[in-house]
Image (cartoon, rainbow, N blue to C red; front, side):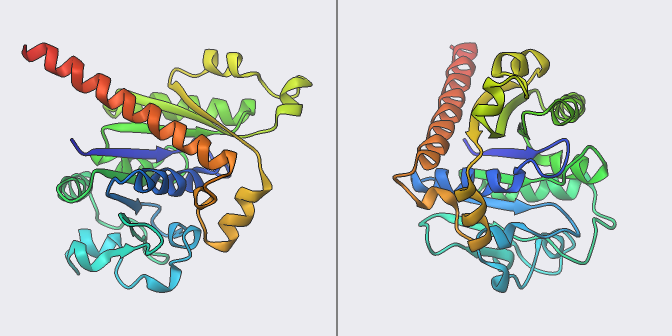
Length: 253
């Protein structure tokens, strides 16, 4: 059963797009067919994170407005067997697009892909609401700061109101020394603040910044602890899916 993940954040600078790129790349490394869709209208960045900025001809706006077909807007990352992206427009905002446009696009993509990962705009404005329209699960990316966690909690409540009941939390850019010194909240406190279930913690590492600027997903460094971290997050998500399927099967037994 195909899934649509909304990757969102309450504020900018949390590493949301970095996470979306490496989540999709990690799924692709495990043999799944994945598409990452950039829904941050007017602020196109996803293609840069993968070094594919020169490959974008048509974008997600073109698809939903009927200018081109889905296949024309899909860009394959040749470093992976089954990873594709659909870029956003750097010039046009959402215009007259509606939630129905997004739902229809996601349903069509689900026929071709195991996982559809939607990279949403930061915050809780209309752009995020639009991006969430086709998703069945939300992954909220936050940094371990009280202001960021407050924004993430607001986003979490907004996503729940939009009908997305399954929400997970990723804590990114964690500096252990700061946590040990008491400068930032501990993981136990974060889980008390947030309603979304904690699915993973990613340590702050300059190698992530370097790989981002080079247009290379950090998970390509297969022996790195960060690659293993993302792999573990994907394994947990897959386990959650299997548990959900088993529960559904019991209902019909």
